[in-house]
Length: 398
Image (cartoon, helix red, strand yellow):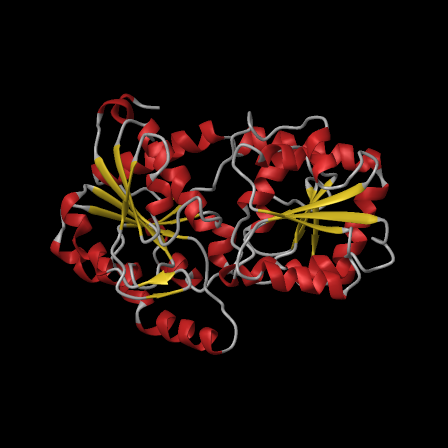
């Protein structure tokens, strides 16, 4: 960290559609930014439509404010209060997509030339059915103005960016973009013995072939691929395998019904939401981590990174961004998105070969520590803040 980063305290707003305790990648990354920016000594304020649960938490190094909502659909919320935020802060991080929050902020951005805007582009919004058509209209009519409002566009990986809806913009205006991957607390998420209390809770033994999944089970996270994992459990290869599914949401009952219909009683265990304190132990409980996302709505995979730091091999869909951390044959295996047979084959391969599983798990842990530890990202985030507030605009990775 440079002396400038240590001494120049600035006011920063983080605008996000979701925030923990809601489980989801956008909120989780927004929380990481808030904690790290506060650790760098800045005055950090988070603005989100869903803050009430957060307000009851113990004192934190940043403040959380609830944005008044004038209408809501899923994680989209019309919050015109974002329009005046740049007047109050020297730097604003806008987590995108944020339908209903990004538009008012972007439309008023030109009135505050002394304030800087970093747009954190998490993912393309793909959607299914009528929603997909609505997202397409937004991408053509409104998204260009939102992107133009940003002084910098921050992405989790250039691999995802180049394969995204805004890849052409990157090729034309590379200096606008910065790569800043999520990170993981490698002290908290670390290899260890299987916790006997969790095995007992879920009706498992240390000898069981156990696959873990962690992710949102709501409509907004349709792309996580839970049905693919459940169907993989019905194959001959995984007939002796159990899966623990950590997460909650409005689709949980539908997934539980699907598991029952597939005859997976006792083999597909729905753990529900798990506290932050208990989550690391859940990774240590498993043999392999499954990450079967089905489309580009998945841009990186923080849960997969936590698994890798815990020394777990990961079997993941071969998607841009995800493949930056799930390196085929090195830290896990990649399979075609939506392929139940390929998912089952690779999971079985790892579950049946303890030597390979241990080697890949060690590689995974090494990569997490050397490339994605929180301390590495902290320095890169600090440099991004210095670059933006000093007026410098170098291209490339932070």
